Image (cartoon, rainbow, N blue to C red):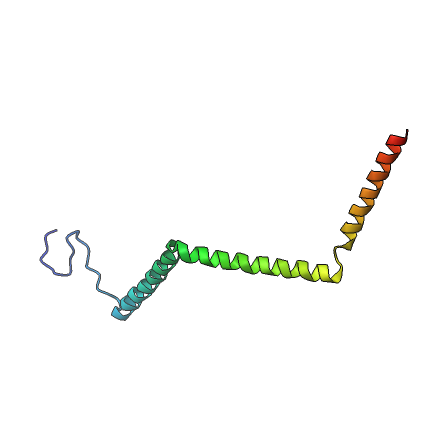
Length: 103
């Protein structure tokens, strides 16, 4: 199969002409955009300092929210039940010790 036809590949098959140049260009642009997004994501992951700042800011916000919750509960008297339970347990303990010493 020796042919001097320029449309033949060295493997013997016909050479494929680009179906639509605009489609190829659009595909290249889409690939470039995807690659740029990937590079940006990798750069963000590699920036340890910025990630640490973001995490610290999130933890500060959570702790501030928890502190505000505790303060509002304390102001509303939401912790009186545990305090009463501890006091009652202490009274029972002291009473039990006194009764044990008397006998």
